[in-house]
Image 1: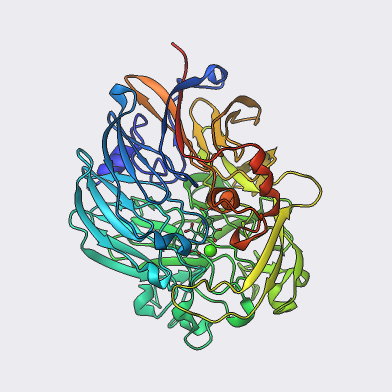
Image 2: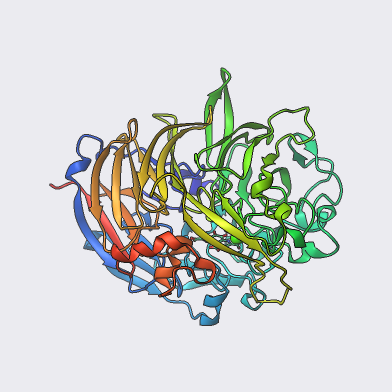
Length: 578
Ligand SMILES: O=C(O)c1cc(C(=O)O)c2c(n1)C(=O)C(=O)c1cc(C(=O)O)[nH]c1-2
Ligand SMILES: [Ca+2]
């Protein structure tokens, strides 16, 4: 069943969050282009009626647009033939007690379409398949238990006859996993944990490889003390990609629990790891751990776009990944071979480099700087000036890739932190965090973000646009030689793909942490984006905290957002004038 593959090849529609299976967020549409984007205007808008962070993007299937919201996760089907009139609305009944169990705002990264159904993965971990025509529930299944700290913010990946879903809870000591359900019935197909026994991991100790070598027996539990892996985290809340030719899907796992590294000696495998798995069986072909024994909360879940590019004179099937830890990685997606690992944020100081010497004992590992090692500095010691902050040089905000320029367009953060680990004990459903942080703009300027163009074959920044705040929105690249992204102040911006020159900006009512998408209706190209400030960067504002240094949202510099943006979700749709 390659329905989704075919649909994603049609640039007129946008049927999964990532645009295509490869996560390039590239559109072949070029009616709106570098020459005329400056004339773009608002065609129509739609208020979602929900406050807090609006991540993800709408879908367009035929003449219908599907819009989702953060908690309570309302889904609207809008009629594009009638300027967005509501065709149906689905509002799940969810226990609001799930809200305090969500670490980083009540976000949801959106819907997916396949087989006549719209798939939603709710905050309370209920996965529902809605009939795309009338919004009626076709099936629903419960994937986790919020009382144990298990929640969801991620989208759903439809592959062949299955839907694949992740789970959140790395800040709550969840043993995280990826799970596949039958697309037609919701019946459980398989579940693969990030940390655990070989049976739980769905690995073959002889065949599953790490940097070309078999991982061997008990590869995960050997790297934890005692039973700690049972509360080991490695959540799966990020973006997934899929290569239909290799029949492998890819994703990264998040932080090991707790954030106090002293409390969990060892590499804590396979947290902070990219997995390549077979969607039919769940079995892993290869793994690569970016940040062994994390000491900074650098979740490894950021998107893993798949592109074919020439390296050393040879076209290769690549997987590219901009990790929270500040390194941009390029790997061979067939074998997991590490090809490039370079800093994409000039602030990064916690490691000097990733060891690329194949004969070295530390091959593939970051070389940690003692001064910034919260493990070496120890419990109850405030390690100062670590870059990047726990928000990472990039968080969930996905990049885009243009095959025309061969460049990645990456929304980034430029923030540093002080980090103090402390002892914490595990109680189911309670935060299992074990560190306090404060975050602030990187030294040497007053900007907290950059929007960059990156050459993944060389590991080099090609151009970089400073932004006052982190760029928490996802990018879109198009055949019109433009790149779109949103800012936390609420601007939708279009820049020249080759040079980064700003060609257009428009202020939407609230900060943008949604991802820009494009489609056509009756032959005309439209660009759409959700506003609604929130996510980890905007949580202080979205949750109405008066102290910007309070709680997990301790991100001092973002308090200034108050001066720019209202709250409240809105979809804004743009097009060229007649
Ligand atoms: O470990 C986890 O389970 C988990 C989940 C989530 C989430 O579900 O949104 C985030 C994080 N961690 C996290 O570390 C993080 O920085 C973060 C930012 C955001 C966001 O949407 O802005 N979510 C999350
Ligand atoms: Ca996390």
